[in-house]
Length: 202
Image (cartoon, rainbow, N blue to C red; front, side, top):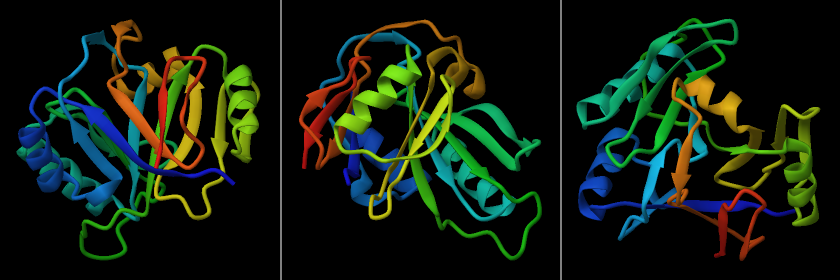
């Protein structure tokens, strides 16, 4: 079964971005950085989600990110599905920090339970089949709207949504051009998917 080991962002200033991620989320080798940044405008077509155990931990991570220079796009708040917020890192990457719990069960920590890479795609069904053909196993599928893949031993999980729906979920316009400025490190690579996302072998 295919798995994702890391994601690599193309950034204008790798040292500054590295300092931000160490301070905000401390994700270690699962997030890597390299220069130079390829030209891009608007929404890059993907987001990262950090899934945690409780609202207090959501607040701690969102506050740390904003304190390190991120922009709050959606303040952390309760919703139908739980509690979460959205920030944009100084390099432009969009991050959701969320918990399925609406109540705290203890003091805030910085422990992250899951990292989910969410790709916004033009055709969810076609992309679903593409990834199945490349060794990924589907665990959840909601027609042409959303797909989630199994990741029993993967540091980073993968999901697919319609591009417009993903942009709406994080509070940005769906339009964008140029590079995704993202490379996905996996034992399934190397290849480029139908929406131009680059996968590299690790």
